[in-house]
Length: 401
Figure 1 (cartoon, rainbow, N blue to C red):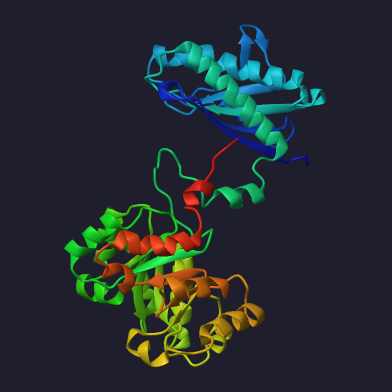
Figure 2: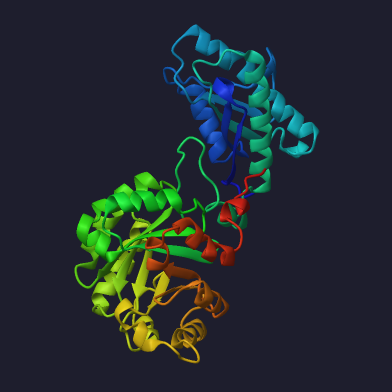
């Protein structure tokens, strides 16, 4: 560890009002943590008075710990919880961490620990306060000294996990393939019925189709969000102009992705991609009627997240009977010459038979409309595609420590 460096640890343990949440800094006495330790002990603030961690009166831990209440202390009852079970639990955890080799013994005199402690004002069980804070402190120390989490772990967990208090997440497309259901229906009552019938599966994406948006505006996306809060929702704007403005409108109505037309001016496409990525949502480029999708992508400042290879509805019947769908060649060329990190969505002519072919040839997202939305049994129709995609990604969203 560098002279002025420090390590950071965090842990949440327990349940109910006695739940413990620990944030801590671990560093040298003559470094920034040591300076903060001295300042905290000498510059007090009302309701958040730091105290030394003691195993019992007259016996501090080594390394020494400064216990800092996160929640404002407003009464003697609040103070008792900090000065009693929380203070003792933190100190005991540090002492045990030294004994068990989690903290090197040579750090006992050279390092200090800043421990920020959460005690709920309505916590009453001192035994649980002690046990939970002991475990959380020890876990936070272990994490600080081991560098947990590493970037690989963060990248693995970030799209799978849901914060227990927030209860929401920004859905990401982390495990293709997906089924994107194009809601080109304009009748809201039928849409509500469809969303009751369509399986609640993590591999399902909802598309607020262009007819839907023309009828209901981007406000309609919010209505879909109320019906399917955790589903990835695409606003199929097919933007041709004022790209940033349209992205802002869709984002403010909770869209997870926006679609810009590949035939739009390069400046518009660049604007949509920039604005979408600035907000942290996905940018789709729809290559309908674009002669050379590869050239469009090569001319952009920044690549989109998803490329739609779209055969429009009006031309589907005229393009039947080909030996190989030309979209498969385009996917291969773009992956080889532009980027193999793009997701490819295919729309137009996708049914359970052609869907299998699309997946084999590199499609990541199957965009299906009328086959499902006009079906008398949309659940059965959707499951015909879901059966090709494998298991629900929820089965892969794990949380373990």
